[in-house]
Image (cartoon, rainbow, N blue to C red):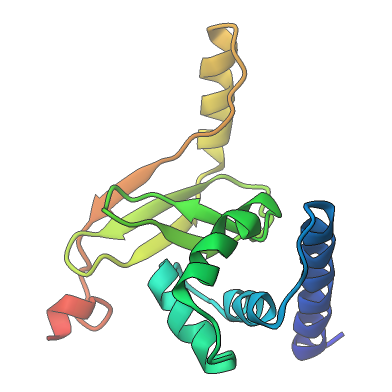
Length: 159
């Protein structure tokens, strides 16, 4: 199966899972929610609610800010996106990629770009530490603040 057909199949599967999740919670898959979901599935990097609003409005101009903000928790509950807190006044979101490996976040102090890198040792470490204390790890995160070395990759360095 080529990449385009795989993406269409993945998108259809995700749309159906979202429809089922909404139905289980007494909600419908409206045109606005469809546009928001399509905008989410087109994301290739971390995004904010405002980024999502702008992209969803390109798909359906009737999408409102309120609908985006009400949809974010539903998208997280349905495991389509995850929240990424980097200690700012607003949250970032990322499409849930179902990776098995723990992801560490590296954030550029200059431009704010968020990159993720496999860090499977952290998954083991979190579980081991919690187990040692007679607990079960529920979540964990590793964030590294860094500075882009290459000005071509740093948004603020180019300005």
